Every structure is written in structure tokens, then in C-alpha cells.
Length: 387
Image (tube, rainbow, N blue to C red):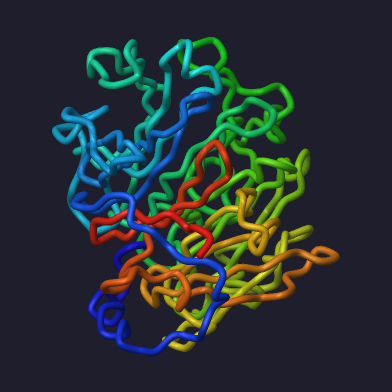
């Protein structure tokens, strides 16, 4: 996600974007965060947005005033690795009953370069005692990049986790196509016991002794920002490419068990260009619904940031999947027709603040009303609004 060609990313900000639709705009919600990478809102708690800093803190922002909480909701900076541009505190998922239980999960790389999935509990919904931490899952990251970092509850109540392939380039250990590792996979856990987790009985590899039973799907490189459509339950994610292509993947609700998205054999919709790496698609491989090439043009980029299907109050965006590129900071949307991307739109020009520009789009966020927010890794959070 974050590291590739950062200086190039800053250089291309002067390129004039295509015009987006004039009926939408952004308003700045809050600023001054240290490398924000995630934001979200628990069910049944409105008017506040939880904003995550990559270094290890989470703040609560009042959406009416833009003021952040006097104390962080979570502060685990001492536990989080800050080495490399892609490590850190990367994702959070509130339990569906957070309003009652106070339980939530975070995904981060620790100081020994392991990924940790940790359950916390907040009694007051405003701060967290670090002593409540329970490590649910921990596994080694061999390199400093491609950690994935997303986690979220699906419509089936299971906790899904997006794991990168472990890093370096071209997945040198072929993690994404090997079922004896959690790397390069989408995982699915049952965390309902509230201590540890169970492997769901209907996970696709539970009876395969050569496979990790937590695996739900394979063949991903660095899934950077996944989401479930709040209306349909469909699953979407952006998968960051190697040197040539970025991709958006889609899976209908209730499908996807055992899916293989093709990496490292495939980059986007073609064989990975690196000699000795790319090849024919695995049997039954899931093709991306949208790909775009590397570059600085209006339909190009270098590092995809997956988003959400818009379900908020703006009619113009209804049912459109909104996504972006981190390093060529453009904001796009599309719809699916007969399983293929259609009606592509560029909203980059419309979705800019009155002063300055959104520089490095690290993530999107969604509130309980379906409003979308844009996180600028430089420190600000914006809401997409009707103009």
C-alpha cells in the first residue's frame, strides 16, 4: 500500500485531474492526525468517528464540532512496530454488539514483526485499559511490507481478516498460493466465544490437513481496504499490484469459500510480468472486476485504496463503489453490470477541499448512515457531502 514511489506521488500532485460531478464536495471533519489509516463507527453510536493513527493510537472525533477526545480511545504505541512505511496499527473492527459489550479487535504489526489480532474491551466506550488485551492470533511477517491489516465482521457474523503475502517483491516464497501459511489470504474466524476463537465448521479447508483451517480465500498480494456492502452483503477489496497493474475484486454475498484471486501467478488480469513468476490462472481463479495500469494519468495509479459501495444520502453516488489510488491521488467510482465494471467516473476534481488538495488517500470510512469519509495520510479526514 503505502511505500511505493512516495516522492513520485508527491510530484504528481500538480497534475490537473479530470472534472468530477459538480453535485458533490468534501468538508474537512478534523485534521492534525499522525498518519491516519483507518476510521469507523460502531453500530448504534452516532455522531462520533473513531480515527486510527498508524503509530498506535485511536482517537474519537465529534463530527459536529470536529473536536477529538481529550484522551485517546486506545494507545498501544509501545507495542507497535514503526519500522517501514507499511507496518503499524492498521485496522479495527467493532463487535456488532459493541454498544453493550465494549469489545473490539485491532490488527497491527508488533515490535518483533509479527502481525497480532488483539481483542480489547472498553467499558466506557471512550478509553481502553490496555490490560484488557487478549492476543487472538499472532503470526510472523518475514518482511516489512504487505501486511494487509484490514479486519471486519461479515454479514454472517464472522470476523474476516485481509493478510498480505508477507512482503518483498513478487512473493518470493509463494505464500499466496500455498495453503500452509496465513499469508496472502483472507481469513475467517468465529470469535463468538469471547475468548480465543473457533474455526468455522464451514471454512473451506477445515478437512485439509495440509492447509491452515482459518483460510477463507487465497491468492492475494496486499489487500488494502476491504468492505462489505451494508445493503447487499457483497464483499469488495482493492489488491495492490506489483509493477504493472492495480485491481478491484468482488464476491457476492454467501460466495467466496476457497476462492483463489490469482496472485502471484496473476497481476491484475494478466500473467505477472516477472520472469519465472507469472503463469496461467489457477483453476477456478477469480478475475478482478476492474484493473488499471501504473502511471500518473487520470485512469492510472500506483497503489489502490479500496473503498465502499455508497449507501448514504447523496443520490448521485447511490450504489456506486467508490475507491482511490494512494500515490496518484485520484478518487473514482463504478458500478457492476452483469458482473463487470461499468459507468466509470472520476470524482477527483469535485472532491477537493476549498484550500489545498487531498494528497495521499490511505483509506475510506463509513458511518451508520452510509456517509463516506476520505482519510488523507498527511493528517486530515474529510466527509463526502452534497454540494
